[in-house]
Length: 90
Image (tube, rainbow, N blue to C red; front, side, top):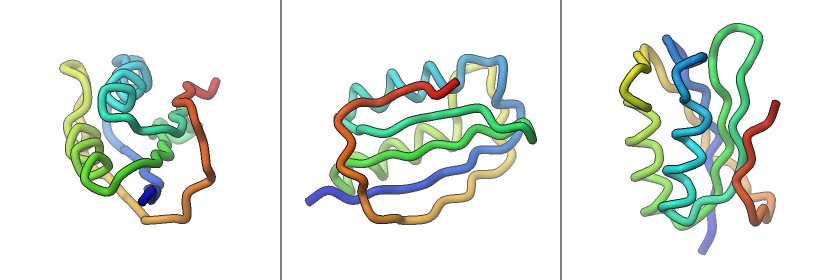
């Protein structure tokens, strides 16, 4: 059964390939959704998939790609939207 999570990642997470890394990890785990940079310097992510895979995805988001420095991660479980791709939103 599919579920979904909404994540806001704070810290040094823009300009470090965070969205690209997020998309790559999501595709490895079979997660659909999107990632976008926010005006306040955070990255906002929506992911949908199996709960076990989402837990692995969240663990990756807590660290991010090598150049990132995650200082905080806010998450909220939300209803899935039935997405079938993982997009980087510009």
